[in-house]
Length: 74
Image 1 (cartoon, one colour):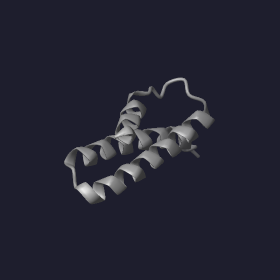
Image 2 (cartoon, rainbow, N blue to C red; image 1 turned 90 degrees about the vertical axis):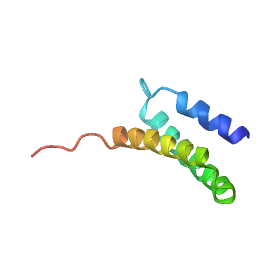
Image 3 (cartoon, rainbow, N blue to C red; image 1 turned 45 degrees about the vertical axis):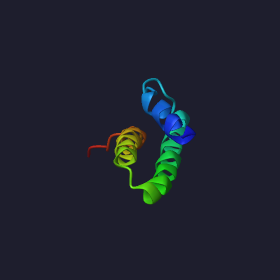
Image 4 (cartoon, rainbow, N blue to C red; image 1 turned 60 degrees about the vertical axis):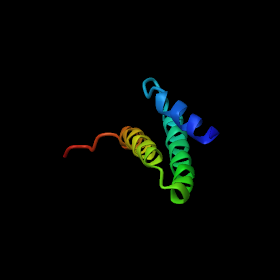
């Protein structure tokens, strides 16, 4: 299960001091991992895979929130 090891390594990476292009790449990597794990989950229905996907989704949402930035006030 190299994919799961890769996902756990991604989960451990820090988000601090990343450039915008690094954040975009991290977001895409998270999406790729989530979709790949989802394909395995569809076949096995393993609850631990679902938990892993949820954690990766949370991290991906944090990255995307930082990419969008704060809304401008008028």
